[in-house]
Length: 160
Image (tube, rainbow, N blue to C red; front, side, top):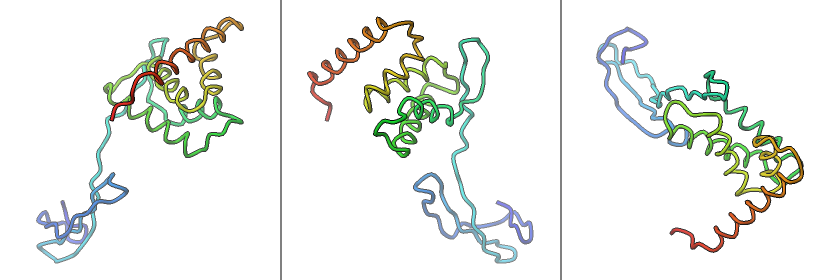
């Protein structure tokens, strides 16, 4: 690390600690040439997450779009902004685990999974748009699937 005061290349780390809730490392450094002390931060440089749309075009993952979709689905429901942010973070993290590219379909399914665990009405609202419902029969089938999934989850013991 180059000294910001004298531009010398020889600097020593004198203290390191976690910063930004573990998302970065704060380092205090001292220049061997002029003894100037300064602080640097080390953070993970994420590779941009790209979304492959159904049309074939590719665009950057936009977390705000996920939050907006979750917000629209949960409008008027008992879901806080903090809950929306946490759900969006889990969707983004799960998407990143799949690699640097993810399909919009996969993102939509991750959003559905989040909503299923939070609010049935919000889940159905999102599913009706995501799955392009055409009538009451589509809602009926999705409710049956939701109930079947809920029963199966309740019947199976939770992993410790």
